[in-house]
Length: 604
Ligand code: PEP
Ligand code: MG
Image 1 (cartoon, protein in one colour):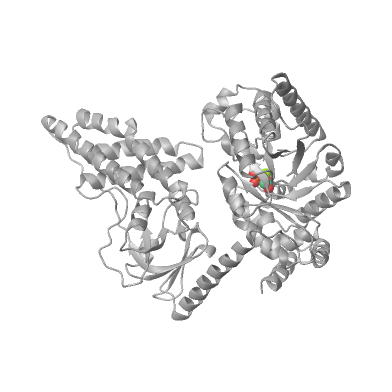
Image 2: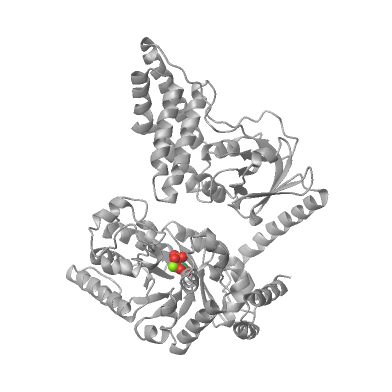
């Protein structure tokens, strides 16, 4: 969603989605619209070979440019940078893009540009029909590659970014575009005469490759800022405030000074935070707190370590299963889990078993490979309430056993724990435990090693689980509160549905009581408990969760040092008083006010 709030004639304020934290100040450079506006004409049959030759040359020019960009990447650059260039190289080499336009030139006797756009539209249509948001967004990559070929056909360099007006000495550049290809960003980053501060695009969501690239390069950017190119003019002074998803055009002098101060403060704060990395996390009254990381892929374990995490509190293993036709084998899974265990060097690694279902779906082909099982018919009417997580695993025993064997084998190389998602019934706990026992038996028969004392824990994500803590702790070695789902299921709000997003309230007293009750139940039974939903990384919630008795927080690695810093300022006694006050309160607005007050008094 995007909106424009006009403050005065010159100064404008736009919002989109910030994809990197931070502020960037620079002069705007507008890129021409990327809509493919190509000449279309028919050709004589005898010219078909020449036309195909033009196309081949254009493909070669683009390939060479991508290779040049790749060769120019500095050692140690983020791995995504290479990955994006490789992806565009792959698209460029795909027969769907190279062969089909040639056939169109020969068959319909049309020029190369026209043939290319016909094929592009065909491919985009196929992408649009894909359910998966990530894959759907890849049509942007195809469009970007085609655009480069069309630019090359016109005799130019494939890169669209031409900076004609020189910038004043010391001035930085902010690119304003409808959309940007990763290669455009890289091209600009590589130019000695241009200091790219950030970019604003009208299209694109936070999962687009360009957004991911911006994040990994640490470039502040705002995507999805509608009408940016009609509001911002060439040479305007622009501030990207990615922390607040905002773009400010022609700020006043006072505003500029304030931004300058924030940039300096944030820089200094980052340096201070890094100093905390090696320090044990504890409160002002010296109570030790474990700060763990949530990861999605094995590669993320390095970020966790880099952020000084005490371990992995949640490895969302389902990401190994998504976006692919063939499900990962036991060996492939083992390699992934063992990698994380090794990277974490003995620190605990909690691997959550497959949480597939709801918004995280397997590919059609992957689903078919599982057979019908006891699967619910597709499409489900209520996927979040359907066959998800442990329910899915219990419906497909082979899938579950394969994963359990892989995790068990990885327990040989580190401190690995198993976490079962979305438990609601005691009989699901029992079944999950007997599956683990069966997987152990199978490994024993194969004479494969594993940690026989591996701990099995469960997630508290539905109210039934929160209300069953006394029973669950009798059979499970630890619990982890998944507040993202606990809020969804307590308030009956689909967490992915923007039309009810305003009702998704983490401060609803019922949600807070369930969290508090779960923590208390675990403390009473002396069973470790963590929070691994987004709340664990929200600074505003740190004191409240601490006051409820929480001693293990698991969050995105980027939040760890910030939460650690906050904990140094908190005392468990004050926190307990705050929690008691909040839990007595029934009005979420008053709860919010109390937390903001408490949080401000710490950051002041
Ligand atoms: C949660 O529900 O809070 C959780 C951590 O699981 P996910 O976000 O993966 O559903
Ligand atoms: Mg969940």
